[in-house]
Image 1 (cartoon, helix red, strand yellow):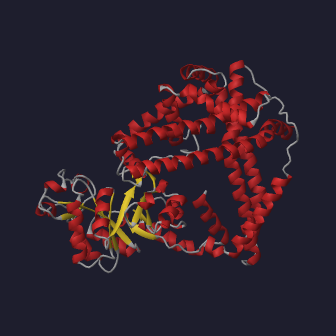
Image 2 (tube, rainbow, N blue to C red):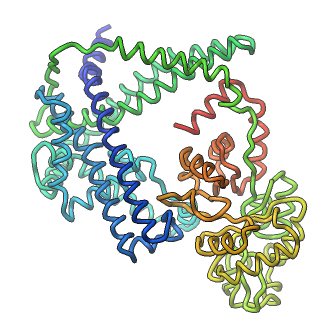
Image 3 (spheres, one colour):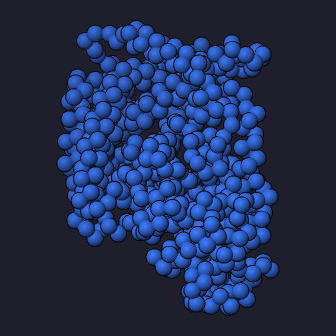
Length: 586
């Protein structure tokens, strides 16, 4: 009993702060949405003035070579400062007020946090903001802003790093350096916001406090995280896991489906609330530690004084009414919201993925045997004008020859061996796939130009495979050329990063890297009447995630695994169907 009371005492300041945090989150999220709306309109005006609808990874030089691109970069940097002001600085001000008992309105807290970025507009401040926005979310250490909290290293880059001992070692060193810098400067924003220090002085103060108190900081973090996660786990067990376990004992039918919808909805609300309160509560704890370390002893929370007690009755009534309505709608349209089967096509990467040899005829056959809908291949032009399959800049990795395709004749290429098999031509792949699979043909490398586009279209038409071939590329100018001059040919543009109206690009397919294939991005592409490809989904969890989304196809090395997962989806319970679908949204 004493232990329970102690835990309640520790948690009480955080539970009492929740009404203020909720109000803060609602107001600041609204302000950020307004800013993003205005920013989006400004970006569209700038892009249209340059003759574009979007900027992508295939057109990144535009940002540094035109006045529109430079202005977009400056506005983007300004947006990061605005995010830091609302997402972090104002939260620190609010935390200070809650801890010290200082009476201030929500508007005052937000205004003070926003004005504090004035002290950060200098070279050191820019580095701090870039670290918070770009480095912290990738490392998973410290606190980042909501706009970039899901930032990641693209799979195609991480796979290159992991494939080399040297690259892995360099990446490890970089991670250690950034981690050390992040931990040492954990209280830098507190120094700026609370102590009104210049960014450099705030950094020195933070490093001094961390150096003197790092053991206690680690201890306090562990205790805090265990308490919060333990509390959430307790709520989830009582409100979600136990009821759902009991539901599985009921026979399948209307009652079990209705109860499943009800309790999964409750679990989803708990998850959303945890996300809404998680970072603000952690910043509240960080701010208490900041005060404690400065005074050399634990800084106790002051009592939160309010003019009138907080009432949750109306909010609870509205929430329950919304949940009831949502449960009813989901019950009536259950199969529409949570489909049993997937319509997502499985496409083998580099002809056969892990089923066969890379970019070979046997790889294509293996993909077909494994149940793939299509194969993605890479073509490059030889010195004498033929098109052969190869992914890299040279044949070194697959055939042991360091020459580039454009440095060799077809006869020389045909003497190479990919694990005992000759390098195929584009024509040979067309003949082999015709009538069986869709061939997603990437125009690759230095020779991916208008000539390659013209030649590829000529071959596709020669074999009457306009409906069985999609010409794709990372080079948007090449895809735009094909779509403009050969509208009967299917095209796809591959990008791993973009902003603007990516869905309005001139092509039939938009290929998105895994992490950029969000629900909003997928919906935007479909609204433009285009299809979505996701590359390269190899992990089992990733494949299952996208098989439960509205994407049109996933490009993968693990074809058999993806096909097997698609089959397993048909055996899911109502609970599994709901959970799988909700995971694609949250």
